[in-house]
Length: 464
Image (cartoon, rainbow, N blue to C red; front, side, top):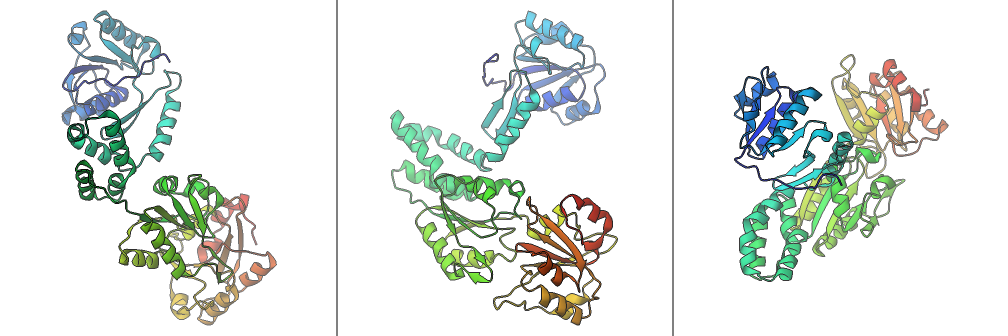
């Protein structure tokens, strides 16, 4: 470890940045965030620097730097854009005993500025000792993805109550246990739910020695179309926190692998038209787990509010007093269409898209076919493999041309994805001929045959 990690208090202290380019501007912004008094010295500052000066971020000295510029300052940044210029700045700073950083030149620096993750008072610095700033940036991105969005609010609350906690809980071990209860319990849960008022009430109750009853939470989470990398950051964070995961058939194993190892998984998927669990049973399960003070993730393929009965579950849980949050997911039409190279709207063809379920409670879709056939746009049918014959026949009888292009997207976004192309008249035969299995989407409209798009998909498509 070449550089000793430390956090410096430079609030209100003068610092000098020598240089007038983008690197100097970046350092000036960072120093300003730490409330330092930033002086930039450059004979020819670029617009990125003058813009900061106009906003009051820094004081500009439009001239060459001088040794006297470093008198009484806390830090010096060398960002002249040349090794010789930075080396001269570094020598002058060291001669005065001042810590100096030369941008991307650790060999002449006395300190390094790390890649930084910032959440209010929570600051994480990542350094590779100058070996690879690019690697430090990648590590920063990885850490950013796993930190909860409410971390800054939790830290602010801890700062607000720190003195009171020290006064009311003087014994060190007891105080550590108190903070563990704060960060792992209802206070943190209230922050994550966006209810800072309730979080403060819980803090006061804890300080007064009153037990704070934990509350269960249910998160209706969209798992996306299948590819684990299409999961949202919020969904991934909730999977890592969940005590119980209630999931559907369309959720991939790769997505489930993101969950905690000790999380309980309950499969409630439906397949082939037969229900493994009734919706009423799923509702009761979610309610029971929430009342048992558990963090519950109800994980659904695609988006929870698009043909996923998420709205029914939301209504039921809220009617029974359960805290519920909804995490959107990339719905299959958008994800699979893009993965197959099919733009659902294309200005050369259509300006609208309609999403339709290919199966109702009774099996065959209950649809106003005449209205669909007159829409000038793309039609996307979910869950339509089993009823492909009905879809083809009804749309043709309603007036849609038998030659209308159709694309079938099987296992979209996954390694086994197939794209079959035909017409409204022929596609039911394609389903049987190629053994198409759910999950699969049916795209009806001119965009399904757009040839430049079709070539984009050639690497993973079976063209018909």
